[in-house]
Image (cartoon, rainbow, N blue to C red):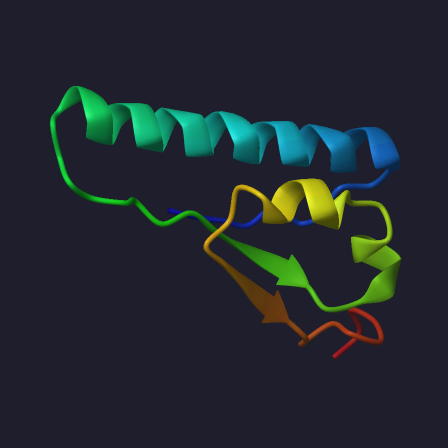
Length: 81
C-alpha cells in the first residue's frame, strides 16, 4: 500500500499522518495474522522532497511503520513547473 498525502499543512496534520501510518501498519499486520499468512504487506509513502513539506511531519515516527519512502521532487522548488 502506497499512501500519498499532498501535503500536511501544519504539525498537527503531520502528527496525524504518523498516526494514520501506525493504524495502517497494525491493520496490515493483523490481517496477515488473522488469515494465517506468512506474508509481510508493504507500506510505503510518496513524500515531498521539499523541506517546506517534510519539516511539518514527524519523519522519525513515520519511519517506524514504513518499508520504503518514495520521494517526489517535481515540485522541489515550487509548483509553477
